[in-house]
Amino acid sequence: MFRGLYWLRCLAGWLGLGLGAVAWPAHAHDVPPSTVMLDLGWTSIQVDMDVPLSELTAALGQPVPLVPEAWLQAQRAGLQRYFEDHWGLKTQDGRPYALQLTSMSLKAHANPRWRSQLGLRMRWIARPPEGAATTVFALDDTAVIERVLNHEAQVYVRRDVRNGLLGEQPLLIGTAGFGSTHVRVDAAAGSWWQAAGLLFMRGMNHIAAGTDHLLFLLALLLCAPLQARCGRWVSGKPLRATVRSVVGIISGFTLGHSVSLALAALGWVRMPTAWVESMVAASILVSCSQAWRPWLGSQAVGLAGLFGAVHGLAFAETLSGLDFDGATLAISLLGFNLGIETMQLAVMALTLPLLLAASESRHATALRLGLASAAACCAMTWLLERTLGCTNPLQGLLAYLAPPPPWLAWGLGLASLGCVGHRLMRQRRGAAQPLPWTAQSKPG
Image (cartoon, rainbow, N blue to C red; front, side):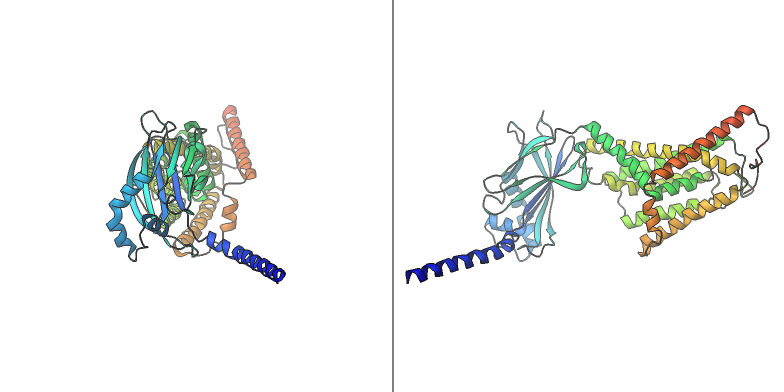
């Protein structure tokens, strides 16, 4: 009899273990964690907290509200005081950071396995005490953990330009839980020189990989070596005048995108992304139309500045979220803009000799219209894709050219050097007559 009871108990134990193993994953994933996102700036730290409403009300000893928005309005002041008492940042010697709550709202979650699909979203600005930095500190969070024992708070660094984080992939640095509510943050390894270098390279890559931005500039530069006469393009424009036209176009584009980039990064100008991207495509079409007839006259610089402002709004996406700290944003803007300008100058240096040679060729008109038509075709497919959601038939080719493959860049560079060498040789020989394949004043 006792032997039978023994085996019955063993069977019951194994069944219990099996049921527990099946039920455990569902139970473990049923408790949503809090998340803490840190943006580390020069003078301040922005903290975005997302606390599940079910866990927060359990910690407060309250039921989950039936009307969450009304509950939040009634509890806002009390919730602010509660979190000010139960979380904070401290220096290594224990001095607290000054906290300022800037927003509080409810955020919907999208995980059906969580008990609650709402979270309390708060944004704080933390400023270090005198003599302390924003790189090394400790975060303590006991708001929910002390009273809901199986709750956790995951702490991430989302933005820290000194260490190469710009928000795309937040870095998990620690988890606070019962018995361990202390997370240490140490970002002292980075530097602002590294930050400036990172943003400089981002600016260069943004232009190199931005085929639409490059096509806009090249379409405007296409006619820089030509002069307008009787409503038509003719060759024979002096080199000095050509350089002035190129510098004017580049300067107008630079001024336009620098101003709009700064305004958008500060949050003073906001436009829907789809609208901005569509306007970028439309700007290419407008600049390509100049290749058929010089209808702009001396207004090409103004056009470059106007559409440069549109392109600057597209650039601003890279710096979004850095406006919480003025010094950080200023350094980021400087480095990013310098990278953009460097790549623009490189493109100009690479293509200007080729454009000059093409403008002197007896096939200058065909080359100009062919290049402008190709750019306009790309712009039209982008415009249809971004406004109507049409499939872009050139997507594969455009993806291959963004950024341009090394063989293409090297090929253009060697061809450009060949054109420069040929022009220098002509000048050294003192050739008074053009070569057979050139024409000084052929209308186009």
